[in-house]
Image 1 (tube, helix red, strand yellow):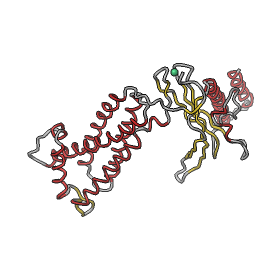
Image 2 (cartoon, rainbow, N blue to C red):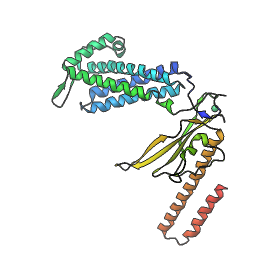
Image 3 (cartoon, rainbow, N blue to C red):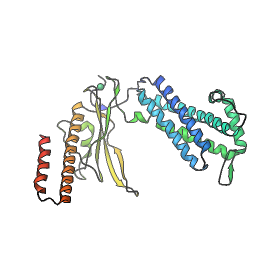
Image 4 (cartoon, rainbow, N blue to C red):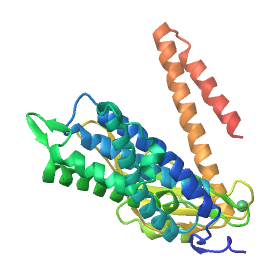
Length: 330
Ligand SMILES: [Zn+2]
């Protein structure tokens, strides 16, 4: 039984349907993205530095499509996902060139009548057209026409961005995923299944390593964190009661200059296989804490409503609301 036991969770290396799924799904999405990207590039009324945003968006789209294709086809092989990322990146760069030349020539050349597929099938022609475009360039930044060596540098940078982003993103869906080999399904992930403050500075955090989570659970109840604490993520198979895993992070929160709460997390453990009951207990833990928070919110809202109406029997109603919650909990 490969799922059970205690220890670090590792992907099985199984390819699933990814030998067919990844090339087909990725090629389809990348082709569509390349055409959209080409039209935006050629028809954008503002040329120049904004192009970097277009490149980044295209690169992100290509990388995300790979990650999506790997997940969809149930690929559990990291090396394969990375290799496909590299191949897809080259495909994306080539396809974006084909689409770019097609859109550019369709717009500016009067006697142009090749199809996208025509151009795609002739790499030699793609290369010759690129060289021809580079001679005089096709856009300027401010008063400067971008051409020759400068244009080639821009193109090389663009290719480097697409390649790097795709390479990094392609295996990303596998990095924090758990697969139930018995059921042939990805496990449900619950990020931040529980969060709590550390009781004090001397608290031995190693006791929150999933390895040391045993029933009955000896951890504090869920709490919304403001500064720092522990976050436990869980995975469990929705089909069987066999596969469960958890990962513990030490997290720090801070408010950045835009007023947004940012979380910095540092793993205390790898993804660790745990008994199914531990994950169930963590879920139950959270449900109780959330019900209590909801009841508190409701009581606060009720109090607010009554304050607005100037009712005098507020306390009686509040007590009722608290009692109601008590009943639910039994
Ligand atoms: Zn299962």
